[in-house]
Length: 381
Image 1 (cartoon, rainbow, N blue to C red):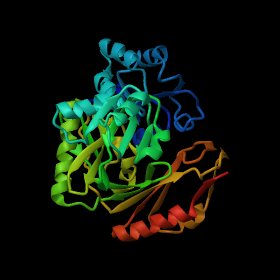
Image 2: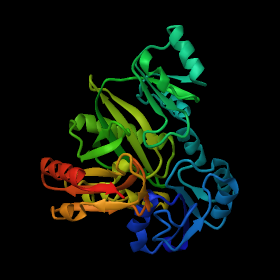
Image 3: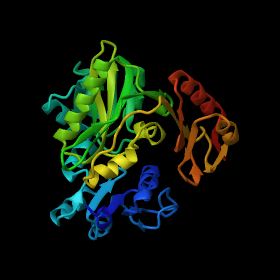
């Protein structure tokens, strides 16, 4: 197969697209990106960058007309345009049908329920008033988590309501409400599939969240869970990607409850923050694997070569402006500290500006170095 003859279009030009381009530039593929400004992370390094709005029907449709394969690095794209491109014979990965389910947390939860995929109990509400009424009628009890059905990302669109005093945090939008499950760990799995039906999973990772921004602070690979629990999580992930008929990557976020049950939290049909460590720590990176999946190449080996810790480099709180990275020299003095900056010109509070991956023969030593990086590398102005 001459993969160079296939023209690939990617909707989105952020850091995920940038790392995807960096991963497969070695193969000299004909890959193109679209987003609103060449100042975005991909636009700064990729010559095949087109300015457009991935949420706009005409922009997406026109961008896809001369492409053989269309994929995404962000979910909030115009699905109707993708449906029309699919009718014209274009390959769209993930499919518009899968995107429609995943983009709506209500449809997502109903999909889990209808396919016997374990997830927390939930209710669907049209607005804030319906939630308040359900509380008054005793149909909804504290504590619970409210999530906007659409538009949420990176901790946005989520409200944790523990008692009456938290009701001011309620989101005034169509949402789902889940039980606030007692959680022992949060883990993630990246799973991939190609058109031939080959499926491959990366080892589960453990995620620790920054509480104020509700973003991943540290990621530990491998996750400190039993082989049996890892196998169950991998089985669930394979079932999900198979049922959704997704080619490329599916990122699966799962809860491990206090009584050792595994519940699916959310999924994303693209490369994901929970897979950044794969660049240095695995035989194949998640970014290369996604391209392999959408182009129906043989999937790459997913073996974890070294224990690894990934730490997100976030914009400092209460700081906005032209970005500067303090402490880079100090961190690079440490062995096997790999820094990735995303090329964003402006920093904002808690904005993802980069990440660091630390590999070591010992996960504990990697954790020590990661804490050092967290304390000494500051994203500022």
